[in-house]
Length: 196
Image (cartoon, rainbow, N blue to C red; front, side):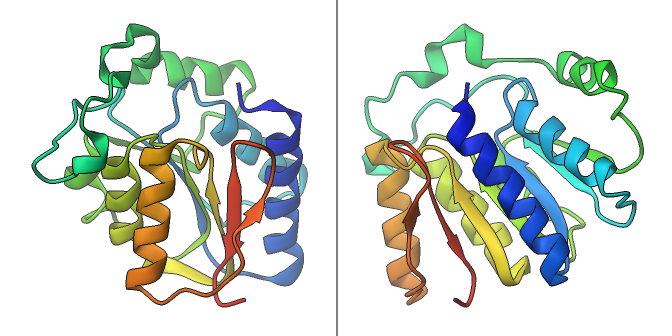
């Protein structure tokens, strides 16, 4: 679903943090069927990395219904009605297992981001991959996790082309006075590196 350009960039990000010694785990917030997480795990396995964890954060029930009183930009969004976006945790675990990558390096954070991410036992992140589509999901992930991203770490925004997501990115960057370049991966996605 994410296409070759985003897969190539994800490989570049993983290889860069390994080469440069950027400390921390990897997380994807919004995993759907688990493809991007599985790919990151496979790259860690190829390079023999056993001291970094892969966090898979998702409701495993699809997207939340909009909360326009808190996040007006999401008003009218209908993604929560698309049943195909609701993939259960058991199916995602099975997808990891198909590639022999379901082990204790993979940790699942099940629930809505507002409930799981602020209290997640994550110390440091080298890669934060945002794939929550909505303003709410994107801003909640950034608020909870951005300070855990190591300098030089990657923040990858899968859904930047969606106005809901890009609004959250620009609001967060403005609030935190982040001036790192926001670089295009393809027509949909963007990334920046913390502290660069």
